[in-house]
Amino acid sequence: MPVKKQMSKKSNKPVARRAATVRVVRTDNAPRRVGFGRAVSNFFKKYFQFNGVATRAEYWWAMLFVLIGVVGLLLAAWFLQPVNFLVAGFVAMMWILFCVVIIVPTWAVMARRLHDAGFTARLLFVNLVFWGYSIVVPRFVNVSVTVDSIVGWLDILWGIVMLVLTLFPSKRENNPYRD
Image (cartoon, rainbow, N blue to C red; front, side):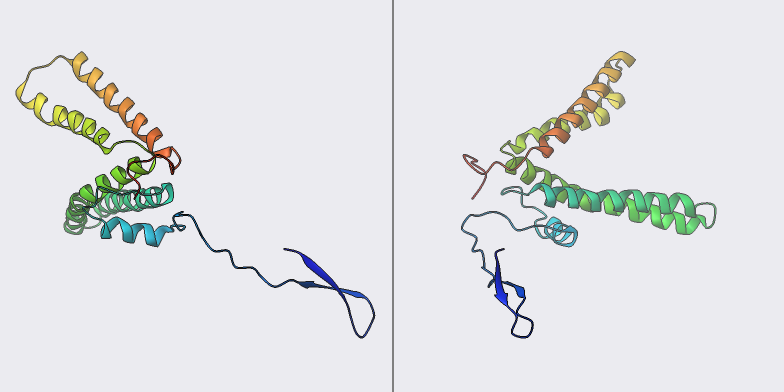
């Protein structure tokens, strides 16, 4: 900001004074900064909203909330088990309820984050393939250990791919998912 030099009336020495502030008007559709509170609020407000976009900040603040909730409740149940088994069981039930409640908004914010980076949210369906395999196949089909380990490694690799895709910056031009 430019500084104007003026002379002091008492000592005839230059005095630095700030020029009038200039207000910047936003002409682009750039999203406002998202903090932890706003991200968690949007996480639950947009519970079933799979269209639109979510900035990196909105996504990662929401994931921090999920991580704190999941790990915090799990650790609380684990540490309370020797003290009071009934209270630990209640906290474990709260953990299960929390995990069930956050499944849909987690997928929704992931879909919006992929849209913001310019990717399709259909990539999330690959996760369903791995989940379906891990739930259905071991119960009904006798597969070898090598097939299970290969699918396990593919699941880990796909998780790394999804992590990298969520790290991409926002694609503002030529993004069909932006309004």
